[in-house]
Image (tube, rainbow, N blue to C red; front, side):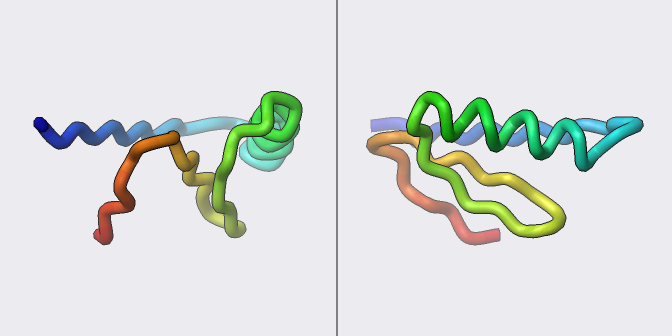
Length: 52
């Protein structure tokens, strides 16, 4: 099986608004995620966590 990884970096004018909207969307669809003041990491089913 081939390991796959996807990262995205966005530059936003209103980071807090986007972060809150993203978290609300993830909550609405019961998507597992981790968050702190700098990032939102989405946990996909079957994915293995990779340390940086």
